Length: 143
Length: 110
Image 1 (cartoon, rainbow over the protein chains, first blue to last red):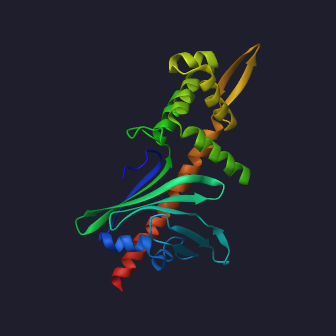
Image 2: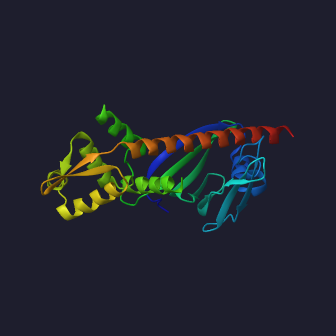
């Protein structure tokens, strides 16, 4: 299925020394997500995930005083193990309609993970330069 | 705080539309009226007005009245706030991915 063209907020790449299936499991299994989705030493996460297209998830981030500091949530948009996982990412009142995508690519013995955060917009051409270009252009103009 | 966050959403929504980004770039170079914008964009004045209202409501432009003509001027503050938010989000994910890396390394050792 063709994905909706969108405006990129951020893209981060990281090479991990584990195979794709291992990384994919860490991204999709709640008992594993709980161990890294919040600051590891000083807090924890409580992840619920109904891993199917249209399924809901939530990530409660809990600080050392056992208070929930934020609970991003959303809906799974695409699952293609062990290559791709895409979901809406909503934090109430803040970046309401973003789309979060993880893509995994085999690199030697390891995996290159690409994380993208985007704003959906059907009107944007796929080759659009995106958010950063927009901000940079404006900043250049203002100088 | 909530108001700031809601405002930020408005900014993102206003900027998510490519026509509005082009209009904003135009205004960033030079203050403009609806008529001055309608011509280069080949868009009707009412359609331009609609886009300008969205930008104005997000605080990205200010309306200045000169007699009957309304002119629009860029306000950079919301853009700076948006940039700060993107930086925070980036740093959030950098930290999470560093955690993921430690988690995977620990899991492999055990």
